[in-house]
Amino acid sequence: MKRIFGVVLATATLTLAAGLATPAVAQTAPVATPTPSPTPVCPPVLPINAMVTGTTATSVTITYSAFVVPPCGYDPPITFHLFGSHDDAIDWQDPIAQGTSGPERSGTVTIDGLTPGTEYWFRISDAHGVRDRYVIGGPARTGLPAPCSATATVDSGWGSGFVATVTVRNTGAEQLNGWRVRWSWPGGGSVQSIWNAVVETASTEVTARHADYNRVLAPGASTTFGLLAATSSVPAGFELTCERWS
Image 1: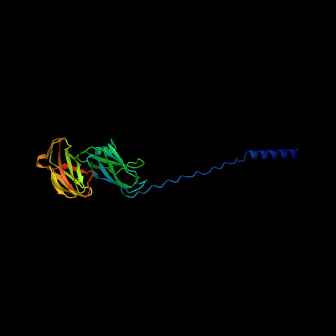
Image 2: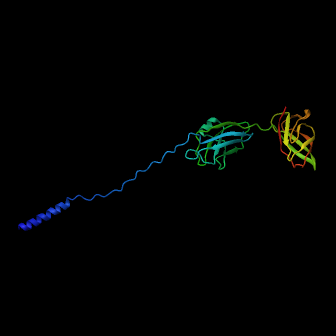
Image 3: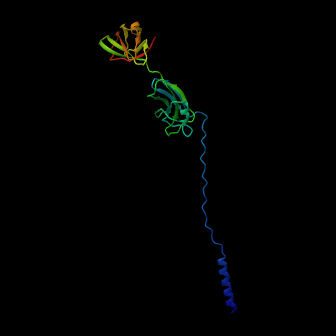
């Protein structure tokens, strides 16, 4: 009986020890800490520079240079947004017109279809729509429209010369008191004689102005003058400019 009781006691002791054993703990994989992206160090320069370099009665030409690439600068094409006031430009509000460059990092952009005698301001954005925070260009004023126009018709020609008629028209809304027409000969030439106008320069660059009796033109009215020219080749036509002249 003693031997059996000892076996039973030993068995109970082993069972109790097994029940009190510490269970195995599952191992958790370590979590990687993300490495922060380095903050780019941008050079202390304007990322882009732009300025108005030309105007006509209906256009503004802007010359630009993009010095720095993203993330500190801008990628072409560069878009120029025109505004009618400095306050609108500051707020990027109510843009009037825009023009976009090519892929070049420097160049010029001409924006047409504008109102004569009007001031404009511009702002800049890049190919990704990122708006420049620094440059507010302007004011750029478009010119006034030409007060008159001039067109030439070659009436007859031969190997060494031709006769032409020039029509001058008042294209403005006010009386034109004096006009002047200028042109360059295509291929060279010179004025031999002129009528209904006074020639001031008769070589390759020609300037002719009104006579006393046809200097005044009412709005929409026109006058003509004729010329005999010597030339090495008879032109099909030539470009003329007309301006107010007293």
